[in-house]
Image (cartoon, rainbow, N blue to C red; front, side, top):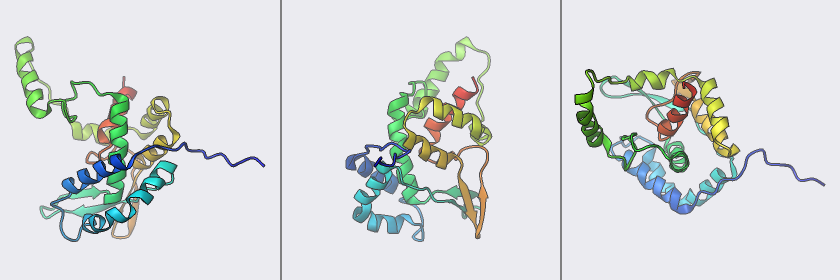
Length: 205
């Protein structure tokens, strides 16, 4: 009898990678209110890290709909649950190593940050008459899902990684029991925004 073929390949994330992503998540959400899910996630995180890692590596993880929340200042945001953010951080670390983003992307950790970007602009001012500041927010919101999916299929060979990325891109937002599918753009605040937007830039060339 022939064995059923798993349509998705296994990943090989390690407990060390998961632990690193977990500490990043706790740091990122340390100022979230007591009612946020990061509190219960931290209390129970150590109990199911290894089972979660197995689910991720086998390609069976499913992302939940984002929650639409309203901040104290009235601003509305879309927030991934803590577990989803943890998985995205794992994937982002792997993709960053695979894509080897250039040093000119100063927003990437280890590339110099804002200080390096300002220094580079100052060095070039004498050669140019104008400085153009791009609208990053509008760029992220305008990304075409179909074109982005084509780029992902071309440049990422792992089926499981592609499966996870498609879930993040073609996401759903829940608010007051109503669900809305997002058909354009990517979420700027998630860990995968940087590597995924890099593929979106390729699709526009």
